Amino acid sequence: MLKRLFILCFFVSLFGVSIVGADDFDAAFGDEFSDAPVVTERLIADPLQPLNRGTFWVNDKLYFYLFKPIARGYRQVTPRPARVSVGNFFANLATPIRAGNALLQFKFRDFGTETYRFVINSTFGILGLFDPAESVGGVKKTVEDFGQTLGFYGVGHGFYLVLPIVGPSSLRDATGVFVDSYADPLRYSHLKTSEQMGFKMLDAENRLSLDRETYEGIVHDSLDPYLFIRAAYAQRRLAQVGEDTYNVNIFKGPLFDSDLLNPFDWIGF
Amino acid sequence: MKKIILFCGLLILLCSASCFALPQPQARVKQMVDTVLNVLQQPDLSATEKRAQISGQVQEYLNIASMARRTLGSYWDGASAEQQQRFSDLFVKILEGTYLSRIDDYSTGTVQYLKQRVKDDKAIIDTVIVAKELEIPVQYKMIYVDNVWQVFDLVIEGVSLVKNYRSSYGEIIRQEGYEGLLALMVEKVQAMESSM
Image 1: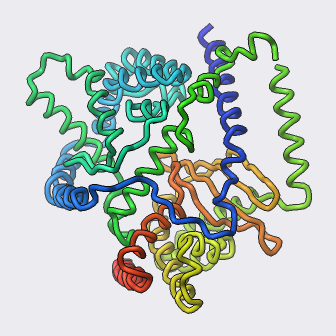
Image 2: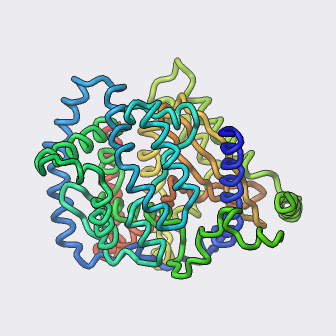
């Protein structure tokens, strides 16, 4: 039964992908291909640039002189498999955020994925320390947050924001992080605020210890790391929201991605 | 089921209509990737030799002129021919410095070819690089020029290389002018070469 459900899910997901692929077919072959000079576009508004650059500078120093050395020390005393497990644990704990936002966007496939992963990883994966859902079942974590949910309903970034310590964000996405914190189980854990902060720090340092020097690479490669990160952030978030144009009409969105929910299917089209 | 047949039919129609006369762009990407992996997996080459070989062999698969022009966008036409040439030369060096410095990480990687979409002389190839514990979706945008498919943009995890460069370089030109951009590029290339 489980296997059949699996296969069904697999086909539904395959089909979903193909529909999306066909939809953005023409968009993908858009103006990027024309030989005419492209008007230099602004990927995201940045009216607070002087302030943002200030924060960016502070974050850069914090990264190189505080957070990175801590991560390096932590990496030396903690074997890699343990760090991967710590990362798995925090990712599993944050499931309500991803599942909730998938539901808010009618992405039932992602909601199913998250539910399945949470059940499997919390039990067979020993409280989420391991990730058999992916390593055995091949079911990968989704990327969902409230910033994307807002984007899905047509809310734009507003403007670019560099948050202290956290890094690149926007008015919309920072609001998203704040809203998401209410779906974070840690918030309801009866831990003291300082202890909660400690867990957040551990999560962040752990992630940094597994990172392959992404930031160092950007600093090494780009003429102006601030501009490079801003452009990459805007593009990546746009890709995550999954719509090239802001789309207020939810009926055009992924609502009909699933066969089950597509009224054309009911009447046998 | 009906839908699947319909979709397959559509797919066949699309393919037969558009990729008739032209060779397959995906095969071209595969050829490029195999060339790179082939060099990376030679055990007796030093890192510097590997980089030099890859840089020499990969360039024929890329349309550098198109990449440079698209990166400057509307500023390309405003520049003199000599400035355009200087920009292109520096741009290639920056691309090399960026992509060759970390390429050894991928020597054990494999590439999966997911799908190819072709429309007239344009193509989009979707691939995934699978290396130790990471999977990176990479999309190649190609055009058919001089009887050969050439890559003019890479989209890595939804981030287009050309768009990213255009956005950054455009802002630098607005603030510091064309010569200011070139000066920054010279500085960057020197820093990259000294750290190689």
